[in-house]
Image (cartoon, rainbow, N blue to C red; front, side, top):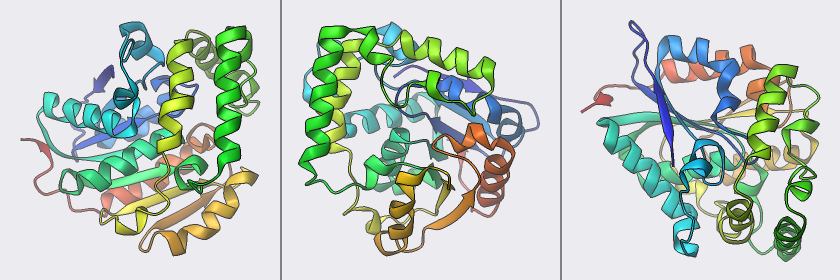
Length: 270
């Protein structure tokens, strides 16, 4: 996965990893960079088949193991090692939250704390065959209809009426430039392995869910989280699936307050 770092003199309660969701790019975090970057050094990645990672060809020709979420978590940890970071905070949006939560489960000693947003797929019932059948249909359509099918995807940014127009156009352009075969592989090979519903109770990393309460389909999941994940903190904000864009001030305030309460000793570059 390709990534960039943002470092500002004087900022520095350690490092914060930001991972976007499907049909986006690291530009998703544009509304949050000023406030989050004033307090933390940032690492922004592009998911496989997305943004600069699509352009670099990551995963092309590789088998299912490379596209398994565990393979992506290994890449995130390789980025940490490349940057010489001992411990960092992690933040994931939508499917990106599935990767950051998985990372915290695999490497709790390397995570100061984690933040996640609405991520229904991460907490779905793994036995839901209907959802996977629907994804298989979408993947097949991508291969036969190409970018027309991509632009019909439910979460394509062009449908995001509550995004600032310039950011909607930027994210739509990034989505339209995605690697179609890579996106089909995410649907077929990655998402079937993404659920962490039966594992989050074992998470020992301080964790915050920033819930965009206007996303109707996610709210039953949010209500179940207390039983699924003891110790999870939840902040409910006005906003939808991309709450960091629709309510950036509220999102940033919640994230910064949560991270300021954590123990950062030993964090930063080792």
